[in-house]
Image (cartoon, rainbow, N blue to C red; front, side, top):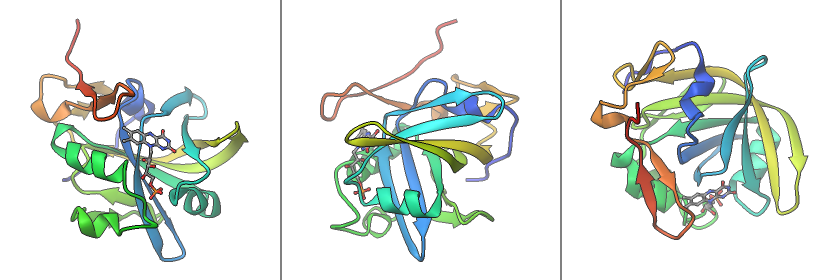
Length: 179
Ligand SMILES: Cc1cc2nc3c(=O)[nH]c(=O)nc-3n(C[C@H](O)[C@H](O)[C@H](O)COP(=O)(O)O)c2cc1C
């Protein structure tokens, strides 16, 4: 999917969509599902994700100092469930789910089927217990023009339907325009 670079990339995650975080370090790449993410600053443009220290993705993000937030829509629900329940320590998730990707100039893994992506460089991290908060400065972002353009989501487009996790295993909702 062709993705165009836009202004206001933090708006891609204002509504906290369940996302697929990709990482890439020393020839090892991974993808896993997160729902704990949000935008935290406008200038500079910062976002954060909360990552359990036991995830296989954790050392890849920590050592590389980078991660990519890939935003899936409802069509990727099975990938979201799989990548959120299977660890790279057990399976190659890219292979198992046939996830196609391209590699950005910053070595970030951008999933072809995601409707948007936000590529981040870690500028701070906070040990908050069992999770680490990785604060990332946005270094690159892109979105499918049909679903997001000029800093606005086009929720009328069927492909713009992002996923939102309700916490209970397997329960997701999607969003619709309110006004
Ligand atoms: C909907 C959903 C949301 C999740 N959110 C997070 C999260 O915010 N942070 C986290 O560390 N794990 C989260 N997980 C769990 C990881 O995705 C899961 O443990 C995954 O298998 C880790 O993969 P890895 O070990 O290959 O890194 C979530 C799982 C699901 C299904």
